[in-house]
Image 1 (cartoon, chains in turn yellow, red):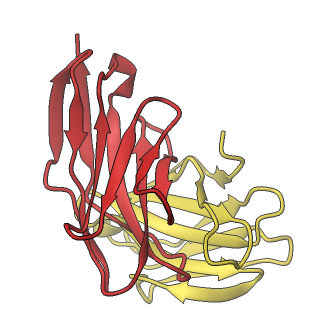
Image 2: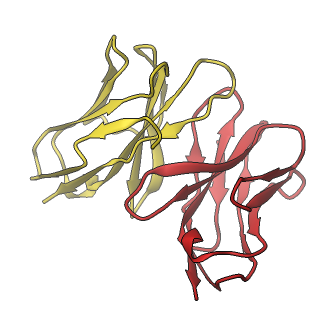
Length: 114
Length: 113
C-alpha cells in the first residue's frame, strides 16, 4: 500500500459526459501528479500540482482540468468524454520541492467510456 | 525532450533462468533513471532508481540495473527469476529537477514453470 488513495476504482460512463477523479496523497506530501495509461499512448504524464499551484503540464487535453485543494487532495476533471479517453488514470504523490522526491503511485481509476 | 525505448514488449522466460529487460533513453541533460513494476490490477511500484554515484543499483528482491552513460542504457537484470516476478516493467527517466517522469512502453515479463 503506497498510502495514495484514488476514488472511484472503476467508472463507466457515456461519450459526452463529464467525470471527476479524486486523489488523496500520502500524509505530508505536497506534490500530486496525474498520469494516463492507455493501450494507444502508454503511460503519459498529464499534470503536476505542488501545494495548490500548478507546477508542470504534460500531454493534457483542453477538455481535461485538475486542481489541488487546501487539504492537498486533488481532482482530475474530464469533460466531453470520447471513446479514446478510456484508460487507467493514476495519481502519484511526492514530498517536497527538492530536486528528487520519489513518486508514490495510487492504485488507479479505470475509466471506460461507452 | 527525453524519450525512453523498451524494445521488448514481452519477454517469456522459465523459472530460475536469468533475464535482462532492455531500456535505452535519450536526453540532452542529466537524468534520473527508474524501473517501476506493475502487477496485474495494481498501481506502479518503484523497483529501483539511479540518481547519482554508483552506476550499479540493486533492489531488495534481487533485481539490479546498471546505468551506462555512453550507451544511454539502463538495463534491468535478474540472475534467477521466480513465478512471482511475472508483471509489467516500466523504465522511466526524469530530467533532474523537473520531477516529470517519462515512461517507456513497458515490457511484460512472463515467467513459467
